Image 1 (tube, helix red, strand yellow):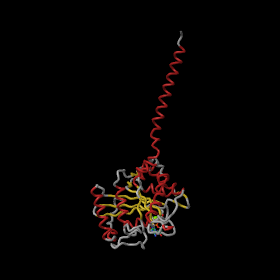
Image 2 (cartoon, rainbow, N blue to C red):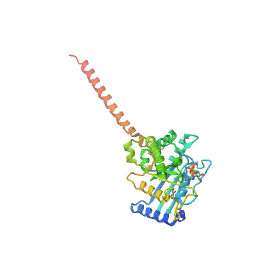
Image 3 (spheres, rainbow, N blue to C red):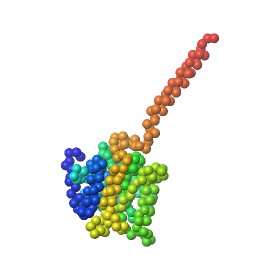
Image 4 (cartoon, helix red, strand yellow):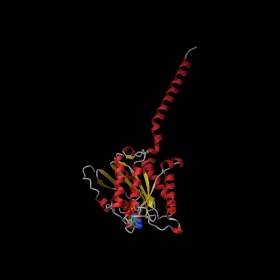
Length: 298
Ligand SMILES: Nc1nc2c(ncn2[C@@H]2O[C@H](COP(=O)(O)OP(=O)(O)OP(=O)(O)O)[C@@H](O)[C@H]2O)c(=O)[nH]1
Ligand SMILES: [Mg+2]
């Protein structure tokens, strides 16, 4: 990638000036913390709005959005620079195919990420879906198995299709927190996090509305039914996760080869084998000396 000329973040100018000002403030905060690059990974089931979210954040149509069929077969990284700051966003193919976890897609993603560092994972799903099921849990489990539990400390749950009218006259914020809680619980169970551990992980939630028909406020910013301008809020969420006290996920050969942080037990294997050998040698020595004693003439 180093040889490619880094593109200027032209899409930034597309945002209304109120949004631009908020984003500039967030970027300068990152600079103060010596963060000059952010690499964001977007993952989730097929058709939930991953590519649309990438386009919304960049402010350009950079990746393909498809209503009918999974278009993306491999991950794509979009890089943009602005005032010495580099934003990398990686769009990925959906993690579910024909009702099953798409392990092949996960392998492809893993390979693509080799030697990259993930600062933030945007785990995307839809706000306007009413159920979570076992498949959701299996996806989380597969992601955890691939990148280790630590990935959830660097995650933001992104809920798309956020411009909705909740069913049964439910209050919008109440509906949103119900849906987020259900998904966060799935993350906790799928990642195998204990209740206290999860509090420690505290995966934040951001709402997204990618539709061109999204309502706007008087400053021309896209807003949710609760009046919140969601692009600056999403970027704020991203910068909070990027600068939290947990380390970014370095995807190196070790992680790729499947020795993720979930099987720490493996490192004890050589020690246990060594100990067994010592005990055997000791027993052998004891038997030999017994035999030698037995042979002694009285
Ligand atoms: N109303 C609405 N439609 C959305 C939103 N996000 C995505 N869509 C639509 O949902 C469909 C799928 O969106 P994509 O962005 O292609 O979804 P994806 O997760 O990238 O899909 P795959 O790459 O196939 O896994 C498209 O028709 C989008 O226009 C949203 O926030 N609101
Ligand atoms: Mg896509």
